[in-house]
Amino acid sequence: MKLEFAVYRYNPDVDTKPYMQDYSLEVADGTDMMVLDALIKLKELDPTLVFRRSCREGVCGSDGVNMNGKNGLACITPISTFKGKKLEIRPLPGMPVVRDLVVDLTQFYKQYEKIKPYLINDEKMPAREHLQSPEQRAHLDGLYECIMCACCSTACPSFWWNPDKFIGPSGLLHAYRFLIDSRDTATEERLSELDDAYSVFRCHGIMNCVDVCPKGLNPTKAIGHIKSMLLKRAV
Amino acid sequence: MGMVTNAASFGRSGVHDFILLRASAVILACYTIFMVGFIACSSPLTYDVWHGLFSALPMKVFTLLALVALLVHAWIGVWQVLTDYVKCTSLRGVLQFTFVVTVFCYLAAGIVIVWGV
Image (tube, helix red, strand yellow):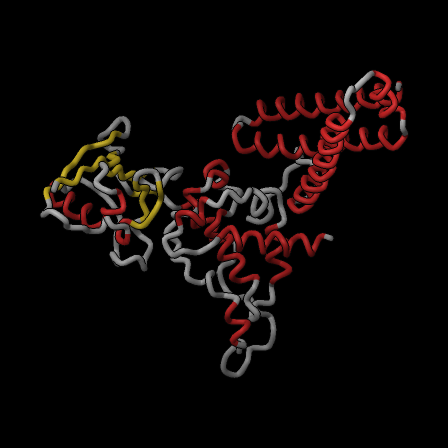
């Protein structure tokens, strides 16, 4: 069985512009593997091919790439998903390419920084720990699992057009994670920071983020909750 | 870092724009449904029927309300689209100006026409 690939190649030191390079792998009939395994095999054939990977099991979020037009983690996407069709692998869209499949995520992290991704609590420190009831803790489910692979934000047109102003689905998921945390006392300040025409409200709910999230999370829903909180504060 | 504000938008904040956009959309939807319903239900649609409709004060107010809603809705909507796609600030300013002036003209013309009936 022959697996066909077209991989986005760009080395700014050598290439004047990016190009797609065809590769093929000969594998035993009926074998399946993850896209990352295939990339590693391709790198054995062509050591100049560059991509990021670390845990290779969908936990670290390093190997977010665009596969046949859809963002996802190469390490947990089986080749069989593409039903024998030629697989086009491109870097995450909209971000500056460092080399081949490696993108510069500085802008993505800057947006994450903006939402102050840490607990703010100005009450007296408890002797041992901040306690939460199981119900309060349950609010964090579906939010804390984000591994920041950037698949969602780089699938979002609002983030493509305004990556410096729109927080993006990933950052907003984290923003809501702290807004809803019973131990955080900075809700009001956090909301004030978000109440402009771009940070939250550039989300028009097209749900590309939900479609691509490899962890099955729902940033659109979290953004909806933030909008409701802002709305309640305003009316 | 901190809040991103913009003077060319309509509302005072993101949430203000959000509310105005939806409120104006409700008015425009009501007006559209009413007009489609009226045209569908009044056949033949003669000059007298049409004139009668727009002679009523509530209809004049409703029409002007819809035109104001259009102004607000278009102002915010066009600003959102332009800030997404037009990255050259001076060009975006000119386009935004043109759109807003156009909708103001619609509003002015609307007031004159409706009051002339």
